[in-house]
Length: 346
Image: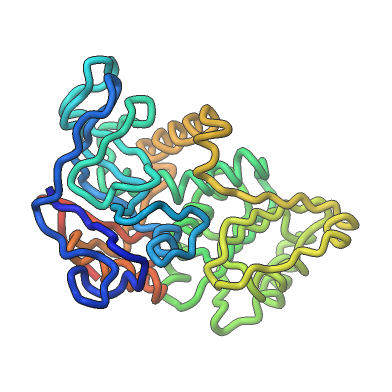
């Protein structure tokens, strides 16, 4: 089978097989994984998502550093290829999606039956492969942690990225007033099209001044929930917009700068600060994560949320996918597609 193998840490935007690339050349001679337990399932991967965590991981900049060599990857969707003798709820041909710490950048992957989710009829497999990490992160943070309510104000930083787009949509499902911050007219237009009440161009506008004008025009005091996958100065400035009792959702640091949240200010303002490491829920509260993903798949089947696929690449073009993520070209998700579904598109 084909697989993208990381042989050393390095720049993932260099084409696989080149001397400077951390990836071995993609070939069809990687061994197909065998079922590892009676309840194991082998999935033929149709599509797998590229997330910022993977971008960091292959450079050795992520908190988890698996031993080399390894096949990277996270969330994916595909078709059941084979099942162990103890599997009761799945059979070959079923359409499923899931997530993994590693291994989805390949034609096949092994998962336990209880880690797989049936993709509802009518839902696109590529969209389902983009759902778990990005939408799961936003759903757990907004619905489970911040308990976002109708009428509250949600400020989404980095709103045109994978998690940002999902946060905007989930905010609207919850009935919130959503202010979305992104860079560039194309991204702002897309965010308006998916329901953002107000958009701010961080490359041109004063974010705090613009947000204050929006809030004043609507008779609103401030922001109730800050969704932050960016960090840096933008985060520090956004604290000026927060209401008493606001929730701060720490999602990531795409800017490369980890902001400081002063504890004395959080005390006086009664802020609640949530760190959200989505994958750890599988270890500590798996039922919460499972219920969250099942609700998201239900929302997807009902059309309450949509998955925007910005870029698609073949496995051998993975370096282009990483470059699109690095250069912030994506509006929504960057995907790697396998087999007959593989189609390169900028």
